[in-house]
Length: 299
Image (cartoon, rainbow, N blue to C red; front, side, top):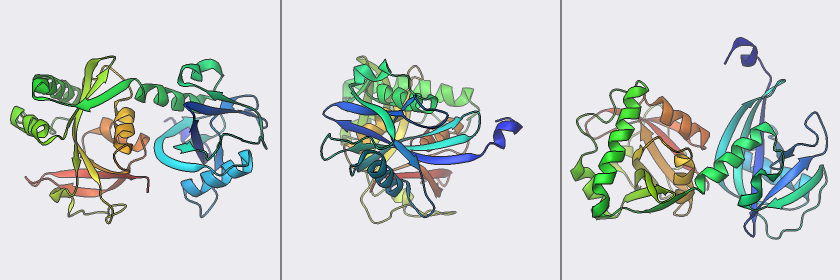
């Protein structure tokens, strides 16, 4: 970020990605410099509010309904000419589809195939991208026949790490065939397909994880609720939206997820922050190596 952008006023807002009967609600701004542009409804977070509390209040004020706030979708960082926007986006549902437009000029329910039919404001385009990307993948359990594919994806992920300056993670042939085969045997391994072709993989493991029992320089967001751990994320690097699709899968199996990554893995750190994870501290692997620990909970 250049010096001029670094001094832009910062505005923090929430946005509701409301899904009802297979369609998403798009609203057209009725005021301000961006009047006429289309957006996901929401507004500013007031002092003392959590993002979820702010979203319930804003939707009540703007649409006259009480929204059910679900999982965190992503966090958009966007530089407009006059300010820097941080937008916390949540998947939401309504008890019914009837809304009242108190502040917006118009509204439309758009199916996934119709999402590009309105001129979205720039920050909201990132939300549309995310919705399309996460729906472009399917996730299934990996089988013994997939182990060579899992090894290939791990090799690709290791190459991406080295090319980005991360030279200390996944050394010594990790994850080995034996580790990946064990994930498959225990039912933890997942293969992500893009248009039917292998694109990424990960291990989705129910907690507790013993390496997460001790954390320093911070604390977990919630230490009482059951959680899942995502390990051994590997991607071919050919398709965007892997983390978004992975989080959509995780949300269907629980809303408390923990992940750790190497301090040199700047790509993963950026993606985790973008998709609503909070950096909680430092944990140590069984061999004593430190890892940055992250958690995402929608409880």
